[in-house]
Length: 443
Ligand code: SF4
Ligand code: SF4
Image (cartoon, rainbow, N blue to C red):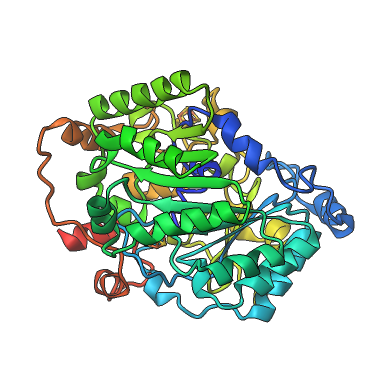
């Protein structure tokens, strides 16, 4: 994801992407902390493009792309089992140059973007990160760095501070060295503790993220305590959503209902007994809901993701959708991508819907859910998201949930760790294979 470890992530993104968050206010406070949250960036050409945008076919005229997610690299030293990077990420390794990214930042700001998240992979692997952040800061973006912590030395932190970085989100996999290091397949726990201190020492608000799933959810109390002891102002406990590598490992990761209820109870108790001194943002997996999420707050409504190779997406996993040629910032301006490209127009509004969504009185609430989830679970990107109880394919979700209730929950294959070699192995024949197809390969 963008790094879900860092990117489920951006709990703002996680909440938009999946599940219901139990403290949306916490999220809004830092998203809304944008230095220019009203979207008052230079908007001359935006207005003219908006007036040219189609409006007669039930597709709304989009507002500006408020939230720019710059996935500056897919390279990452970690190997998280729930990674949101696409399963075929190793095929998309031709990264944009510094000049390309600087142009993207200027174009996105001119189109009205106010918040910019630098994500990956591990964004600190780009040695031009300070240059990009300095330019984003100069343009008036509120800037976030979403990191595993690897590479955040004292010197680098000082340089990022000087560049004007507003906010860092540091991810952990667990509160114990053993599980943290097992889930990422790296020895990074001690380093993350050190990085947490560096973040505090430089005066950034401490935002910690931990992706929650079957293997760590029973220790949520210890994760909260660790965040508190590190001085976190915010902690984002985002249950994994089942995309990409997390879908491959779903049998290992999907918690039981009992586990979820216990975790939510512990979280609420902590909030009540600690006077909310640390904002806890808790996101449940949408498999346990009976209505889908309003994915990304609506297709092409707020979020613009630019992948390492310059492909522009309405969400970080949309590249998996078949028959959908998404534009590249090497060829097309950000404004044209946002307001005029087929890829961004395709699922705006409700005109594209099939039944049961087409005649549903809730279609403006959730826009039929997530297109990627519809593809992965129903085999049709235009279908109703199978999380919805009205979907004829809801049984696919129920079956996964039923399997998660069984003690021991025997998985059909060992955990698959995110790794370029695995990416090539799983997608050798078909680079754009989606995780559901890759799942069949591992089996
Ligand atoms: S493998 Fe890297 S990019 Fe993926 S979730 Fe882990 S830290 Fe993030
Ligand atoms: S049928 Fe479609 S529009 Fe209606 S609630 Fe379900 S997903 Fe939403």
